[in-house]
Image 1 (spheres, rainbow, N blue to C red):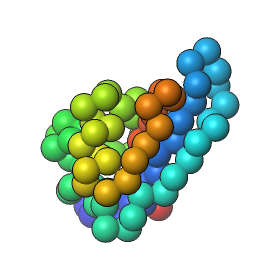
Image 2 (cartoon, helix red, strand yellow):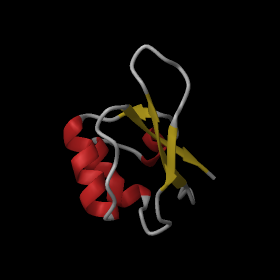
Image 3 (cartoon, rainbow, N blue to C red):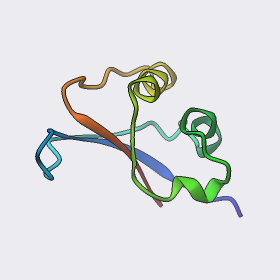
Length: 80
């Protein structure tokens, strides 16, 4: 099944549970484009929030042509 997911990155300071940064990724950033970056095996793997490693942040920055904050724990989430 193909999902028409949209993706967002949000950032949380360490020792906090409140997001202080959010950005929606372009609709051109698809599940298929993110699968190798996120090491997802199935499309359904995208349907959760994922803490991003430094390498994943860099890869997403390059893919989306954006710059993300370096001082926050960054998460990738999806929604329909």
